[in-house]
Image (cartoon, rainbow, N blue to C red; front, top):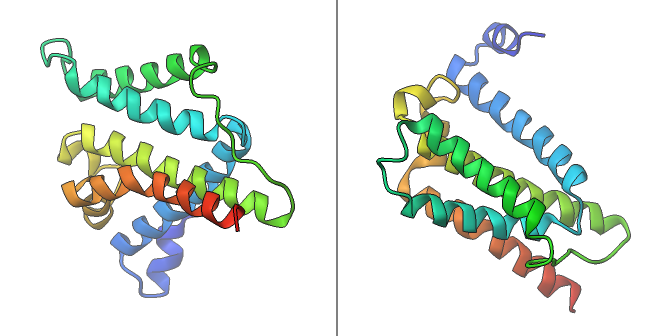
Length: 166
């Protein structure tokens, strides 16, 4: 199924098609990510994402030969911290019932957006535009939006926690 040809027959531009495809892929990855990681480690992965990004920003640029090495080091740090650091930040999303899956999906969606934003921002703009449209790039990698994607998961967790404690 080629979404580009379907949308072009409807008169929708290729850029919009690319953005819609990105959103659909993000939703699918978020669902899989939330189910794979699970409620018990979702917040742990979020904290490890922040720690990995913080470590990456202080690594001397002489060790980072190109953006591929920066992305590889970021995800390697994330995996290592998640595997070996389970005793450090073991915090989970509690609850059950019909709202539980929405809470897990909401937090995992915001985490996936954060990971995509970090990955896109580490790439040169020309290389990133191969994978996402200019509009999506601006929403994911512009400095103001990077700040938003860094803060959004924390605000999401605070919102869920506040709603649970009512």
